[in-house]
Each structure stands twice: as C-alpha cells, then as structure tokens.
Amino acid sequence: MTPRPVDAARERIDGFSISAVAPQPIPLGMQPYQSGEVVPLPFGLVDSTGVRMFEADWDDTVYDHPIAQAQYGLSALESYRLTGDPEYLDVATRNAQRIVDRRDEIDGAWYFPYDFDFDLFRNGKGVLTAPWASGMSSGQALSLFVRLQEVTGEERWRDAADHTFAAFLQAPDGVGYFSSFVDDAGMLWLEEYSRYPVMDSERVLNGHMWSMYGIWDYWMMNDYDHPDAELLWRGAMYTVDRTAEPVFRTPEWYSLYSVWQKKEAPTYHWHHQQQFLMLYRMSHDTAWVDRAATFRDDHPAYRTAPGRAVVAPRTTTAYRLDDDAQHVSDRSMVVLETQPVDLDGAATVDYDRRGRIPQGPVVIRLTSGHLEGWWVPEGPDQAWSTTPVEVHEYRPAVVLRVTDEVETTATRYDEHGTPVDTQEVTLQPGRLSSSYRSGVVEGRPAWQLSGGELDGYWVPAQDKLRVDAAGNG
Image 1 (cartoon, rainbow, N blue to C red):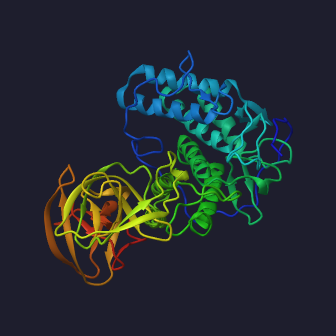
Image 2 (image 1 turned 30 degrees about the horizontal axis):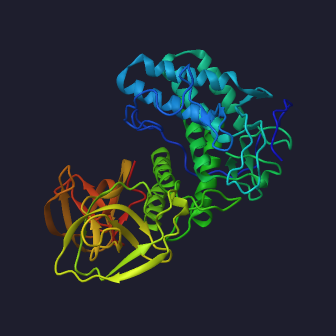
Image 3 (image 1 turned 60 degrees about the vertical axis):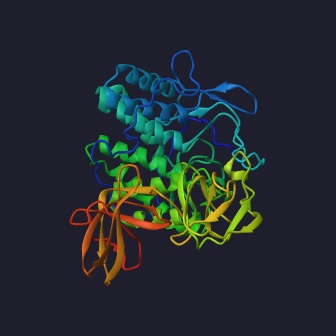
C-alpha cells in the first residue's frame, strides 16, 4: 500500500540501534555536493521559470520531481560558491521554492509529493500510486535548504530545514507518509520508496546514504550540536555498516540496488563506492575505505572513460562478449567467442570499456589494432590502462602501516598519466605513510603515497601494506 498525505498526530521514531561512530565536521569544499565543478545553465529539462522538470517516458507527460529539483538546486549552489554568479543562486532558490510550495504537511513535518504512479522496475511489484513521497527527496531537499540558509542567512530556509528534518523523526502510522522506519532487526532505514507494511519498503542503498547527507548537513547547520540529528545519523550509519557487505555486496559482480527486490545496480555500483568514501569523510572510520575498495575490486565502474592500454605478450586469449545493448544493465557479458592471442611484444592500443566476465576476470575492450572489438583480461602481466583508473580520494588522508618487509616497485606519473620514474623499494615493518588516493594502476590496486621520499609515487596494494584504523584524525 502506498502511504498517503494524511495529517494526523504522529509518534516519535525510536527503538533502533546506533553506531559507536559519531559524525565529524568536514572542511568547506569537501562537503557533500561540493564537486568543485561549475555547470552551465540550464541543463536538462527546465520550465519557463528555470525549475527542473521530469518527462516520463511512459506517458510523455512533464512532472515536478522533488529529487531532481533538489539536485539541480544543489548543483547550482555549488556553481554559485565557485563563481559568485547570482544567476546560480536565483536558480537554486527557484527550485527550492517549488519544492516548498508543493509540500504536504503531517503533524508539522513536510513531505514532498510525486504526482505520477511509479513502477520502479516495471515489473508490477510494489507500484507506488500518486501522490507518494520519498525519504530521499526529504534528505536532498534538506541539504538544499541548509545550504541556502548558509548562503543567504534567510530564516525561511532554516524554517524549511526544520520542518523537513522533522519528517525523519516521525514513526510510520500505517497510513501516512514516512521518511524513515525501523525494520524487524532494529535497524533504522531512511526510505526512498516507502510502502505499507513497512517491510515492503524498498530499502535502497544509495537513497539511504543520500538521506544521511541531509541529516549531516542539518547537524552542521546547527553548529555540529543537534542531538536528534546525531542520533538519526548514527542510527542510519549502524544500518549501512551492518548491511553494506552481507546484504548489498555481490562478490565479483555489481552490488545490489535495494533489499526488497534485490536487483543488481550496474549504474549505481560506482555511486555506492563514492558514497562509502563520503561516509569515511563524515566519520573518519577507515572501514569505509576498505569497503569502497572491496566494491571497486568486485566490478569496474561502467562510467570508466576510454583510454590507452598496454597489451603484454602473456595475454593468450581474447573474448567476444554480449556487450552491445545500449543500457549497461542489459549487457550480459557472457562469452560469445574466443580466439588465441600470440604477441611478440607489448602493444599500446585504444580501449573504451572495462568490465567483468560473469564468474571470470576483469576485462578491457580494445578499439584499435587487430584485436579491435575484442576483450582481453586485465592484470599486471596481461593488459592494463596506461593511466590510473577508478581513483578513490581520501579526506582526511589514510595512514598505511607496513606489517612485514615489502619489496615492491614505486612508480610516479605525470599529469597525463605517463610514467616518469620507477624505483625498486623496500618498505620496512612499522613504517607509516599517508595516502590521499588509491586506484587501479597497471592492472592492480595501488596506493599513491603522500609525504616523504616517495611523495606522489604509486605502490601496489598488498596484505603487508594495510590501512591503519587508528592512524588518522
């Protein structure tokens, strides 16, 4: 059943477990939605007032879309922060005001409705009928209102943030909208697609974490001292900490999108990693560094940009794969054909995709040379991108500890990704090094070191070189 906008007194949500980890301040420029990118306006579909709209592909009707409007406003605010151009602030304000104007109110809390029916996976299961509301729209609208209050100092945006945050504190009542609920295991979910009974709610991983951003923003707006915001954030952190790997991870494949329907998330697998890295930034808990790396190792991001690859003589087999579907979720990647490869020496060729064969290796699709259109296995002895790919950024830097003597190769690249120096080095036990970045380098995971004589060099990841959980601030 779809929750309805029924205004009635609501109980406070409670009875959920919380993480021992507390939220941490984040410097300006590194906070959620601060990408460092200026985006030209307009982009996407907007109406005559500059408000982001959504055209449904099932009926060609244009609708308001609170999440799209919140994201559009947040993007405009980031461009305003970087440029000072008042047009960006005006666009952010118009999108925020549209969200506010369309609100439904339940016992003082604001919810933001959708005016179209929605079948998430178009399978007839759990269809939401208009009007319906989303905890993710609550979370992202909350972030937008907080940022507008910071920029303008206007109390109307603080008021909007207060009313929106209140939705997360309301327990479901079996009838009305809700943005959060407690499951049968005592875990707090910030719910993107809410339904009754509550255990039929979708429990979307990315939506849960986007909503955590909004609660963190609200905690920040209140001078990093708001007990209810901290309580909800820690409850949400407990949930994702307990479910990220045992529930959402699929080893050596894409992670899942949600709990209820358990669909793969090809287009969200990269987002999950980036959100884990933001949770590290919010908490300084290095478990999220490890989880992001684990998800990265499971499957390459479908967004990986084209580049140049080295194919080495140890490459012995090339594959034709079922990879022609327009949408990544429709590419099965099953092997259609193989051919032997016999190279006299290493060759540098173009590639346009990285992927994984089901129950098989990570592979690269070549787009030049005699193997054009074929995939070859990625690895330090076979084929690899000439530049670091799938880079993870860490703020604050992580600290790496050498647990046993390591003999390895350290490589430094220029700004174009060209290797400019390689050294054979021995790292001694107990050595500590900091790192702001990791990635896939020459076909294997690697850390970029920061500080000391190896500043800027990449070294291969290995069991003897571990993140020191106690070593960062």
